[in-house]
Amino acid sequence: MNTHFQKLIHMYNAAPINNIYNPTLTIESGMAEISQKVESKFFHAANALHGSVYFKLLDDASFFAANSLVSDVFVLTTNFNIKLLRPVSQGALSAKATVSSHSIKLIITEASLFSDTGKLIATGVGTFMRSKIPLTSEIGYK
Image 1: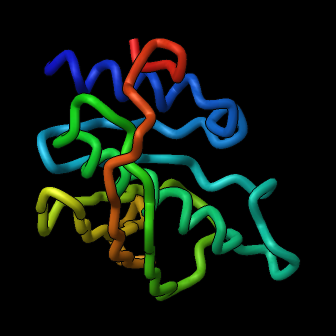
Image 2 (image 1 turned 30 degrees about the horizontal axis):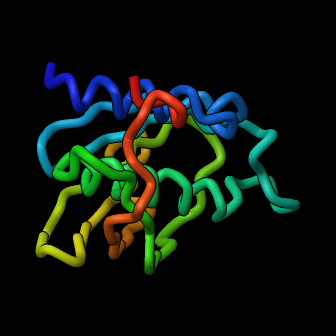
Image 3 (image 1 turned 45 degrees about the vertical axis):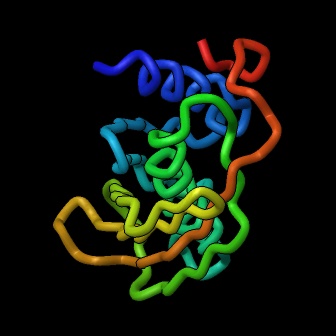
């Protein structure tokens, strides 16, 4: 596996937020996939997964698809549009993202969220830009 991808995965796993969600990340050039189990602690009052989890999975997969193409700095989400298509209350989810456009200033991604039975749950389109934050061990990139 590419060293840059390994370091990005380490950075993701080291992020404190992921101690709550326990996702699994895989990266290829211009692509990323994140999988996570559906747990009741993430439910809203109507006993289905809260939309914030949909967003996190889609945005995270998109972020790593984008950052897979940038090896010197952290990218930042500048815009993310999401479509929630159906509720989920059990199983596991998988967010798959690919880079659809890459220029000097912006990276655009398209992402889809699937249930473990293959049903499309949500989609998203993200726009990312290079930041001034270097990819270093201080942010877990090691």
